[in-house]
Length: 112
Image 1 (tube, helix red, strand yellow):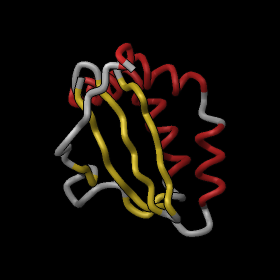
Image 2 (cartoon, one colour; image 1 turned 180 degrees about the vertical axis):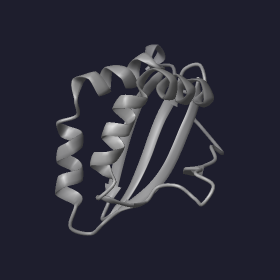
Image 3 (cartoon, one colour; image 1 turned 120 degrees about the vertical axis):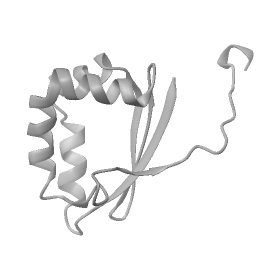
């Protein structure tokens, strides 16, 4: 399992629309996200800044490849709906604005 964290901005005034879209996410899109190996997919918002965290099984590259190969129609449809809300999600080479993991406290829930 590999963890991924990235950030992006949404346009001011679109916060409610952005949150509503995620509260009403299409069931088939949510199922696709799980099927390709994303887990604990979480979005955090502060003003117009969005931070995304997820875990990828077995790794980021595999989850991204499976999503592209098997569900590009859903990704394209979702991206088209999100495009007017997001200011910029990637750099000029198409890479997400990611954060490197520098520390993680692994807790065994059964020992708590």
